[in-house]
Length: 67
Image (cartoon, rainbow, N blue to C red; front, side, top):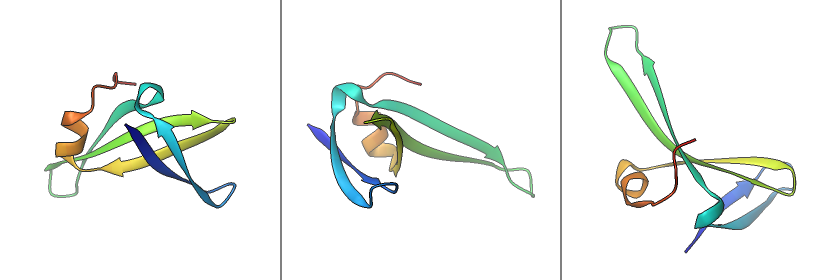
């Protein structure tokens, strides 16, 4: 299964195979002290770093390694 990213540098959508993708979890503390978690997948294609934010369900279902 390929994951579609948007390449900002070249201004086009690219498909990256799931084997080349790594999962990332961004955590931060908000002003009122709660923890906010965002889930993303990262890849690199032709020297361009790509990031796509995804839902927790999609992130959990991916078999990609953690970055």
